[in-house]
Image (cartoon, rainbow, N blue to C red; front, top):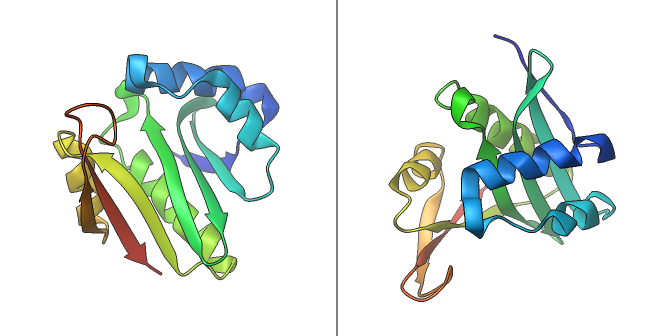
Amino acid sequence: MEVKILPVSREDLETIYEIELECFGEDAYPKYLFEYVLEKKNTVFLKAVVDNVIAGFILATYHSRECTILTINVRKAYRNMGIGSNLLKTLEKEVEKMNIEKIILQVEVSNKTAVEFYLKRGYRISRLIKNYYGLGRDAYEAFKKL
């Protein structure tokens, strides 16, 4: 299986939004957010393509020497194949070229799979943010120095 990591284009946005809905349901980012960030200069928006199918994507913004991952999504049918890891590694390489020194993210405490995913890839939890995702839904903030 060959995975290609490529920039997201305007033509991809409908599929990107479908993947967002599949992964996050009612907690999904609104479609207009993806349209908006596609035009911004301070974003890294990458897709993973397997056999001409968008299998996942990662979206991050950066400012100064810090990058924030907004979301990383992989279609259920493509999970546990290294696609999320590939997206994350590619993002890290891209922002490192821009002299970014640190990547931060927030992950829901109850999402054990995602928490473990980041910890295995060198991210460290820096703090707990109470009610980040709504009442009773806390987040960990995690970071990785590049």
